[in-house]
Length: 284
Image (cartoon, rainbow, N blue to C red; front, side, top):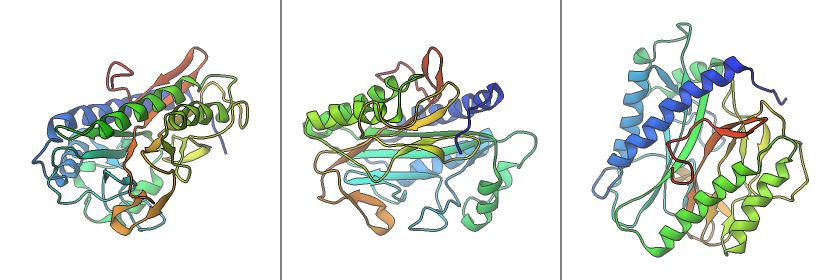
């Protein structure tokens, strides 16, 4: 069922999104050559305790690993989505994508400081029963000095994100979003992942409608004021196909590089308003 969000629900999501965006900003100083990737997970967990927000990915039935045991998905180079954070020393040229979902705690729902993030099974009930302000965003980080291939992929994927958001206006259709992304990326020779898509958000993590990053303009559900969506294009330097590879999550089928950016936004009568903004759009 598709729901239009109330002013209160949007205000809750604005607050949780601000915390999430600040985490991504903080990661800019952490993600560099010589850093252990696991520090990303530790940092996110620490901020969640400090800000009393729930890392909603812990306890999720991801479909291939249940329950998911981490606050973040950390995907490196050819990894597309849902990979585990782990002990790996980042080096020059790496491309790291960090995805997370946070829940704003209100009305004494739970004291996050007392939650055991290492007990994923105990987090299932917390995650399943949560109905507060949800924030969802993935960001890509270039590690040190990167190749032109990584630089170009990074820039194209970020441009895909903003082209998709720009198409999410009242009266347009879901297909307009996907078409804007697909036509741009494929026109430059990149592959657009089709098996994983954006979605509605709030008060739960994943809601209708699903938002593919490919499609035909003028097709699909008509967009309405009050919808809150994520757009999260996953763009490959090679083919669009992906496989699942255990703890590495989804990887490109041909071993090519993959990049992802994701924002959460609300559709208003004046256009889309990005909730998870990190600053000047198009730059962050």
